[in-house]
Length: 199
Image (cartoon, rainbow, N blue to C red; front, side, top):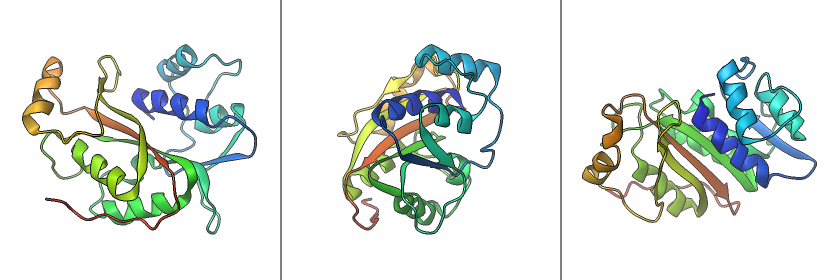
């Protein structure tokens, strides 16, 4: 988990107050210990008494039961695909699985490589605008940032973003190779997943 995702998870946890909440992480290193820097980042955004050594400990401290293996057709209040969607030529098939894991009024937390003009294994922000429109997701978090989360750029999910606009707002980074796109969707219905490319 990189720092921008930590900011998203704080945002989601504040909305998942209450008992009997469930989450699933599809991240390949689900049990990985947080770095000291990540722990400090979490503590700076969400005061906690227990040191959050990894994702499981952190979620359980918030009374959210988190797993890394889906049981049957279980639905979850929070789905964190992690690197499950990265480096895949089957993005839409995998995203449909993510959609199907999420219950109504649940959250899908995405942290993916950014591409200004689209490319293999990196994602242009307009893709997520289309996903939200076609599946009637609410977009509760939509930002671009580097791994340090020093200069986050908030995006308007109602607008189609041109390449020149993206280049202009990312000028301060100089190099956008390590940039991430962070999106959190709220799934407001149980409709079947759809995606039709609107090119």
